Amino acid sequence: MTLRRCLVGMAVVVACIVRATPIAAQETPADTADVLVELARSLETEGRTELARQLLRLVLDRYPDTPAAREAAQQLGLLRDTRVAGSGRVQFVVWNTLFGTWLGLAIPAAFGADSPEPFGAGLLVGGPTGYLASRAYARSRSLTAGQAGAYTLATVWGTWQGLGWQQALNISEPSDEGPWVAMVIGGLTGIGTGLLLSHQDISRGGITLADHAALWGTWYGFALGVMLDREDDALWAFTLVGGDVGLAAAVPTASIWRPTPGQVRLTSLAGVAGGVAGLGLDLLLSVEDDATAVAIPTIGATIGLVAGALGTAGRNDNRTDFDGTLDGALLNVRDGLRLGFPSLLPDAQPSLTRDGRVTMRPAVHLRLVDVRF
Image 1 (spheres, rainbow, N blue to C red):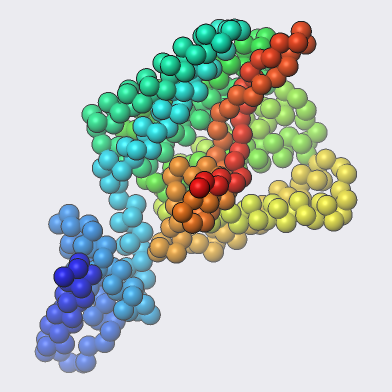
Image 2 (image 1 turned 60 degrees about the horizontal axis):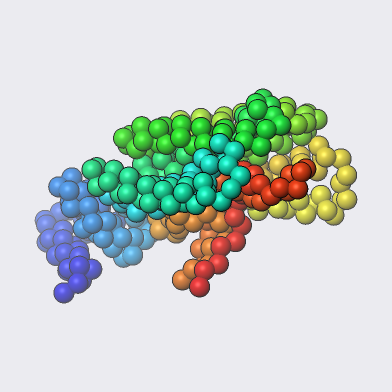
């Protein structure tokens, strides 16, 4: 007998007990749903989370129009947000293997290596070291998906901030090694910060909100800089500060909103849709002024974000919980179609120097489409 059949039987027994109880008025489906929700809460208190989750889903399926169903949906959202020990282990190990591989290339570049041997040694050491060290750390303690996500965000954000502020402050310019040094220092700082954050109680919804808020803040900082006619170093500064403000604002917002990852993603997608609509309006109107061309998509994105947040408010059920922690593209095609949000990722691109040498330059990219067969 499956768990769901057991729950159906339990619901029937509870309903019969309720109906058999001497009361003045006839029991209604709403009363039965109330009893089942209370039973689910009791099961949750006893630590039987999965059974409580299935019972709440049963209430949603059989009594969808009752007030208890709304409570069940909210309770399901909280249960999905319950930190599950060990759920972030795979993400933590995968990301550290990738990031260790990237550091294996970035560190030789930071020291000005111009032959293939140092990069070969970096690849030989970086990836395996990232894998073995992160695997040992993940075995020593249980990491949740939220904690692993916080670690990933810290390393990516540290790398991006290192590159950005090096450009904004013209540190080590015009040295080819300067950007690499800044990214390595930022990335290592991010690792330390991420390890500290991995000891905090962080929800998946909260870290997803922080990730998206940082990206939206980066866009708003850039847009404000363009509209104020800032260029070069000043524009870099506006962009970086905007991202930091967005990231900082996500902390109190997450504690108030308590969103699921799906709610955050739907809200961001609504913002992307609004921004794309604004870009279409730019093209239709043949806007040539830079400030106006940026302002229109920004207004559209803001309208989309507000509409998305209002549209997903209070919806903590499965319909808004499409997820994919490692999905770094807007459109992901692998065993079906999944929507995600593009994340900033460190990268390296070949570049031809003035003296004819080919060198690798640091870069940051956003993936819009990820198709895997």
